[in-house]
Image (cartoon, rainbow, N blue to C red; front, side):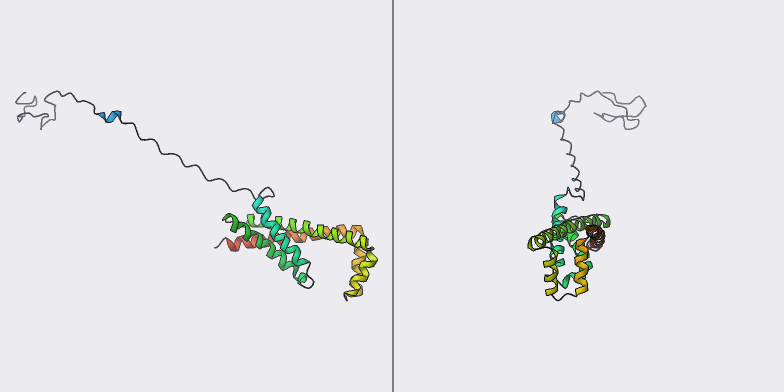
Length: 206
């Protein structure tokens, strides 16, 4: 081994590099260790993105069940004499209740638009149930003897005769029935929609 480097620096015995210029002073065979044979660690698995929420429509079974439950309660309350005078409160409450039920079953916080959507569905289902009940009652009236029997029954319940005459006149005119159904559909869906939007806004804070 040389005692000095080409740069002129004196080297200590067994020096591998020059302490002045860093030049190697001898050749060494570097053997690869078995570390190269060690298999590389597997790359981390990519996490799958969470499933997108089901759109709020009549194809969403949970939304339909929540709307049906609220619609059933609305239809029941609307048939109770005296209590049905506060119909606007029951429709608003039905929209709110449908949003509360949906959030409880899914854990999903709804936007105001989503709450309004479920409220609208509740209004449509409520209108359908009440229309079916009304049609069934009219079939029973026809089977029992017609509007004359209905007029006598309503009079027995101490209703004002003018109100009874208006009801009978309405039922005798198909166009008035159709107009009343259209108005009822609009009012019920809009009120339940407002209740659903209000429910989403309130429940979204908790």
